[in-house]
Each structure stands twice: as structure tokens, then as C-alpha cells.
Amino acid sequence: MKQVIQTLALPLFRNVTRFWFVVTFLGQLIFAYYILMLYYKSTALGDFEKWNTANPHFYIKGDVAGNLIFGFHVALAAVITILGPLQLISMIRNKVPKVHRICGRIYIFSAFLISAAGLYLTWVRGSVGGLFSAIGISINALIIIVSAFFTIRYAIQRNTKLHNQWAVHLLLAMSGVWLFRVFFMLWMLVHRAPVGFDPETFTGPFLNALAVFVYILPQAVVALYFKARFSGSANKKLAFSLLLFAITIGIAAGTVGAILGMWLPRI
Ligand code: HEM
Image (cartoon, rainbow, N blue to C red; front, side, top):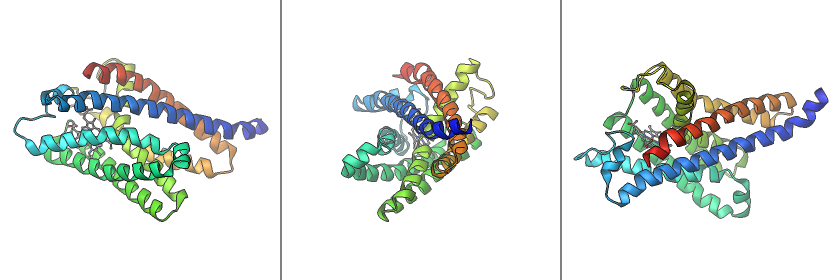
């Protein structure tokens, strides 16, 4: 048995990581497609009322600053959602390093800007949900800012190992908003009703737990990933592979839920 685990652990670890990456990349591409079709298209057509498809307070007549910042936020959202996973593809990094460097700079710069715009929307304009949601997403913004800072710092210092680690932390932090929608829709798929939250105010214990689950816990999963990857222990690789496999199945099911129940009906 020990021999079998020794032989299988590394290929399993690699393949489950690839599986997670493919599911995440496809899911994020579809989220970006939704952003392009809903916000970019309506903006290009001058139909700003369409911004209110998801929520009636995204376009507010007369609130020039708020509308501009919301538009800027969703414009960056599509860019970072497409660029993030692309930066992790080693073939692009190795074959066209210049592309990686240019996209990296755009990605990091956008990370700071989208967080600043998000913080404005949360605390100045006022967002959907209660205080706990506002604090949760602000912690997400903080994690993005810190991870972006260290990702670029270690890139400049040519410290590839630490640069790569911080880049994965950054990608997961930047994916928090997408993960929120995916796991929210997984919950709705399972319960077929708003359980654990009030759909009118968008507050409740489930949404509080979800905020912790998608904004903070992924950072621990990334730490576990690198622990398993750099460890010589086959058991650690096996245990992490099983954990990531279970999470990825959840992501895949939630993404289907989000496509059918949230994104396609809005565009
Ligand atoms: C970094 C990745 C992020 C992406 C891809 C993203 C994407 C989006 C999208 C697409 C919307 C429009 C709503 C929809 O159609 O679903 C939105 C709205 C919003 N975002 Fe972000 N966002 C990100 C980060 C943040 C952060 C870090 C914050 C807060 C600090 C934030 C705060 C908001 C707020 C307040 C709204 C308006 C909706 C509401 O009132 O809840 N976002 N975002």
C-alpha cells in the first residue's frame, strides 16, 4: 500500500492541480464573457440602465462619480479575470516571457485599482448586503493589495520561487468575487431556496460564512498546496490532492449553476 501511494501521489497531485486550473480558467472566462456582454456592450451602446440588470443601484442618475467608478471597476474586472489564469500558464512564461512581463504589470496595476474602486463602492457608495459582507470583501481587497505588492517586489528582485508563491496567493484573492458567485449558486442548486440568508437584504449567517470561505480560506489552501508541493511526503500530496479534487468538483457544479442561473439570464 505504501508503495502504491509513493508511486501515485506525485502524478495525482499534478493532475488534480491541472484539473483545478482548467475548471477555474474556463469558469473565469465565462464570468469575463458575462461582464463583456452585460457591462461593456451596454456601455458601448450608451444603454447605462442595463447596468441595473443585476441590481437596481449600479447606475444611479446624477451620481457621476459613483457611476464612473462602478464602470471603471467592472471594466477592470473583465481584464483581470482573463489575465489572471493566463499568467499561471508556464508555456506562456517560458516561450514568450515578454508577454508574461507586460501582462503581469497590467495585472498588478489593475489589482491595486480594482481594489481601490471596490473599497469606494463598498464604503462610500454603499453595497449590497450587511456590515459583515462589507468587512469580508474589504479583507479580500487588503489580501489583494498585499499579495500584489509582494508578487511585483519578488519579480523585480528576480526571486522566482517567492514571486510564484505570492502570484498564486494573488490569483486566489482576485478570484474571491468569482468564487463567491460560484459557491453561492452551488448552495442555491442544493437547496433550491434562499436558505440561511434573507434574499431582500442579502444578509444572513450563510452569507457571512460564505465570505470567510471564499475570501480568506483559499489563502490557507494555497499555503497547504505549497507545503505539499515542496514536501517529500507522498501522504501530504495525496491528502492535498483529495482536498483539491473535492473543492474542484464543487467549483465545477457551482459554475454550471452560475452560468445557467445567474450569468446567461442577465445577458
Ligand atoms: C478583484 C476581483 C473583482 C472582480 C472580478 C469584481 C467584479 C465585479 C463585478 C462583475 C461587479 C458587478 C456585479 C455583477 O454583475 O456581478 C462588481 C460589483 C461590485 N464590486 Fe467587485 N470585483 C472584484 C473585486 C472587488 C473588491 C475587492 C471589492 C471591495 C473592496 C469589490 C466591491 C464591489 C462592489 C461594492 C460592487 C457593487 C455591487 C454591490 O453593491 O455589492 N469588488 N464587482
